[in-house]
Length: 149
Image (tube, rainbow, N blue to C red; front, side, top):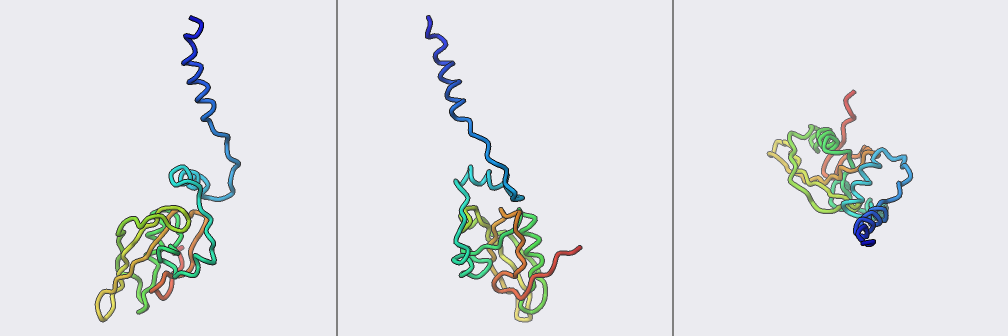
């Protein structure tokens, strides 16, 4: 039985063929996250930023870029409503599909208390951007407070 080791040889050869070559290190702070997203969603998209910026910030076509769920909460808590007050509440509404950067985006309902009652806004965020910090307020808001030190 000189072919008894053939199945083992085929399996070993298959494993060798499946192993991937290591990627060169990236300088980006979210390189590991980008690799994970690439494995889940395919290659990370590099959108035409001129096209993205044609849409208001905080929309599905131009989501606010933040770093992870804590970045989402931090950004939303620093928004200033049209009446000059900070937002009174916000809650995640759910996933909103794939955004222009090729990753899942989240929709948040953000509440501004006014003399006329509560005003609801929907803000879309992409939490897979550890290498970027947004400094502008989303559409419908007056300003973005600086980080507390």
